[in-house]
Image (tube, rainbow, N blue to C red; front, side):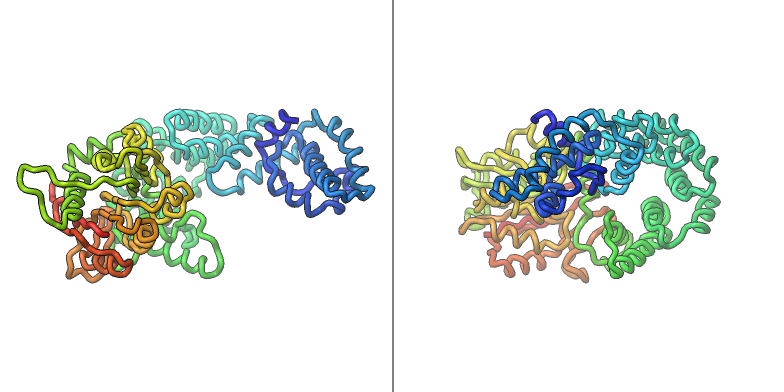
Amino acid sequence: RKSDFKRNQRFRILGSHTNPNPLNIYINDCKPTIRAAKSSLKLNLKHKFLTTCHVLGFGATTLLHHSIQPPSAQNLQKHLMSAYQDSEHADPTAADLSALWNRARKMSGYGDDRLAAVESLLEYNPNHARAKSLLAILLANRDSTKNRSRSLSLAREAISLRPEDAALKVAFARLCGDSESALEEKRSTLRAALAQDPGCLEASVMLLSSGQSVDEAVYEDITGRISDDNVQLHYELGAYFRKRDLARCRHHYRLVVRVMKGKIEAGAVDRKGLCSKASFWLATVEKGGEIAVDRCPREYVIGLYKGFAPTFDDTLVEKLHYRTPQLLREALAKGTNGGVPPVEGDAPEEMEYDRILDLGCGTGLSGERFRGLLSPGGSFLGVDLSPEMLVKAKERGCYTSTYCNDIETCFDVGAISSTAPFDLIIACDVFVYLGNLDKVFDGVKRSLSGNGTFAFSVELLDEDAKYNYVCHSAARFSHKQEYIRQLAADYGLEVVQQSKCVLRKNAGADVIGLLTVLR
C-alpha cells in the first residue's frame, strides 16, 4: 500500500520484536531475507507490529517467488492479512516510546534519521521535555534563520515542561548567540542551572566562557573539580583562553591531546574529533610550527563561513584588498605564453579551456574572473566545503555545476570524476586551510588532461623556516616555495610560471603569496 510505504519511510526498525502470535513460528524459515529487509526498510513506530508483518511478508513473498514453498511460507501469508488489519490502529506503548527515546539519544550526529526519530517521538508524546531539547539542538545545527528561531522556542518549551532539570537550561544556553541581549539571557540561564545543580561543571565552564574577563574564583573552582577525562570541557576551556591566556590555553589543549591519544590507542573512537581539533588549535598558539598538523579541521572551516558568507565579498575585496583571482589569471596568461609578459597596453593572449575545475570556489570570486576562459559549451565546476558559500556562488551564475565537498577527496566524486580530465584546475586562496598538499596534488595529477594546467596560490613561508609548511596564529597555513617545487617534481608536473606578490592585507600589513602555474 503506497500510503503505508510513504508513512513508513520515517523510521528504522527498532531491533527484533517478540509477539504472542503464530507468526513467530515461521521466522527461522526466512531468516536471511528478513535480516536483509530489517537493515534496509524504514518503518514507523506506530505500526510496530505492522512493520514486523512487512518484514516477514517480504521474506515470505521472496521465498514463494523463488519457488521455495515450505508450508510455513504459505501459512505465513494467511496470518499476515489478519495481523495487518489487527495492528492498523495500534498505538505505541510506554515501553515503545522509551525504547525510541533511548535510540534517538544514543544516535550520533545531526542527520535525518535522528531528526525523524525525535519528531516521531514528539508526535506521540509532545510533552517529552528532553526530546524537545534534543530537537532544538538538531535544528540549530542545520543553521538557517528559521531553524534557529524554532530551536530557541523549543528549548524554552522544554525548560517550561521541566523547570527543575538543570541540563535543559545548559542545553538552551548552548543555543544562545553572542549578541549582548543573547549573552545576558545565556548567563542568567546558566546561573539558574547552577542554583539548581551547583556541581554542574558544564554550566560553570560555559558561564566562565561567556564573560569578557576571567573570573579567577570560578576558574579555580572548575580546575579543582574537573577530571582529566572530561576532555570536552577541557577543550572548551582551551578555546576560551586562546585569546586571553596562552599558558592556560596550551595546558588544556595539551591535556585533551594526551588523554584522547591514550583512548584512541586503547581502541576508542574519537567521534567528535577532539584530538585533531585540539592539536590544530594547539599548533596555532605554539611558536615555530613545533606541533605538526596537516590541515584545518573541516568543522572549523564550515563553521567559519556559516556566518561569514553574506559579507565575505565586501570584507575580502573592499577591506582586505583581495586580488588573488585577478593576479592568478595574469600569471596563467604569462605561463601559457611561454612566460613572456604582454606588451604594455596590450591584453595578454589567453587560451580557452573546455573543462575547468575551481577548488575551494567560495562565493565565486575566482569563478567570475576565470569564466571568460571557458570555451562555448564547456564545463566549469566549482567545489567548496561550505554550503553557505556555494549558495552565493550559484547566485553569481559563473559555474555550470557546483559541489559541496572537500578538495582532498572531491576528485573521486562521481559527477566530478566523470567530467575529468580537466584542461585547467585552479585554487585561489584555499591552500591556507591545508598544510600537507600531497592528496590534492595526487588528485590533480589524476584529473588533468595530457596538456592540462594547474594554477594556484599559497601564502609564502620563509625559505629558512624549519618546516615545509606552518600553521600560524591566524589559523592559516603558509608554504615554502621549495616545498611547492618539490611537490611538482614528485607528481611529474612542470613549473611554467611562479612569482611572488601581495595577495591581500591582514591587520593593515601585506600578505605575501606565491602564484604557481604547473603543466
